[in-house]
Image: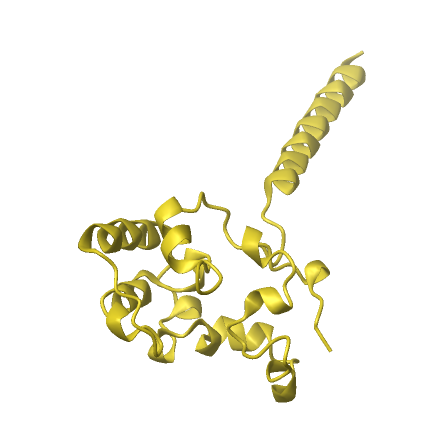
Length: 162
């Protein structure tokens, strides 16, 4: 009888452990998916009219701060905004940016495409691929990542244009 009690305890423990592990797996972020955050409508309105509304976790807060502090020279374009928009977008980007770890250090010129993680993830992409007419540059994520607009960069949803 005692063996059955111990056995039942072990069964309950195993079932509990498996349930906990299953819950963790079910809620784990899929590889290649940017942190899912609710996109600030003003960010989408102001930024996604010209390019992908890049997920804030692609850059550290300091990079976003420098970018928004120099919008009159936004990568060759005057993207100036009113002070209230800059404040709202800056606050949201800072709250949802990449951590300040070495893996997410500010890239040269605050360019996502020059970040360590970006170069590592795209190391197998030949230089001529970026120049294809349907791609044009490495910053055109949606050209290859079919779910980039949803923040999903999983390799299962990549289609490289010819």
